[in-house]
Length: 336
Image 1: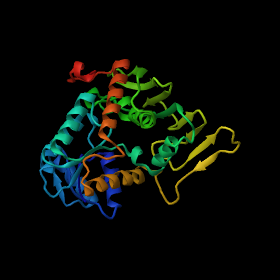
Image 2: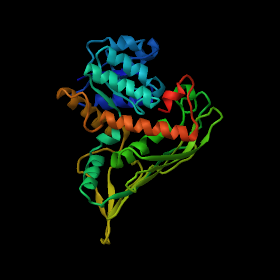
Image 3: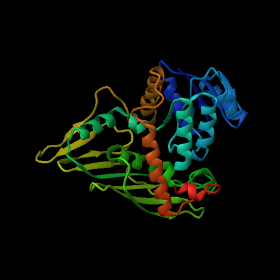
């Protein structure tokens, strides 16, 4: 399967390294807004074609699927350009900057019958899939509470993408998408959304707490931050027990199952399945994309587009609660 990589930042590098470790994947082209940047990236990874524009990459008929690794503020334009050119697309998370743009991308892909998937690697993680199956089978009874947190303390300059509202800055879209997606994997789209955040001088959230509620009685307490070194842990509590995931809940290597009435907890892992690093988890994500394309599927059952749309709606509702708005975004559509 012939891959093109759009953008040349850190996550593009990690994903390219993951692709190069797969025997059935080939990275044949890279595109950037800078020809020099594209050529340097191509030389670093032995990629045969380097383009100084996104349009040139999108027009390359020798590319089967494009991985979009720009900041999320550019996902709509970059992924849309590739879809318009007839390319399948794997687009980094969050899928777009708001739910309106996400709907536009999904509609474009469906109208053209082209593959589109959000790069929510957690959903492709074999252990997470195994855990979700156990929960669906009732191993901890009815899920009543999900707790998940993701944060780190970063010394970011005002022009850094994490703080720049023109690039969709803030903790929610960059980090909060992980705990929100995790909670919605298990409980679906929430009925109620509350949130509070401390905003930076640029007007984006640096430290955010989120409370989600479902009419059936479940709640989720989540947080994201680029000002605090939080533990990236998660706990799922049900009527008959709980599951605890240690550091790195978005690519776990194991989890601990506590069942009511049992004194000894059980540690669950999958033999010979490595998911504890960014690169190893991206391998599973890339493999799912290639499986779908070979099967002629335009959506992944592991990362369904309706699920990505639901997460984007929740992220919009969170931003509305905390008052984070982005320059040039239609506010009425933003909060739709």
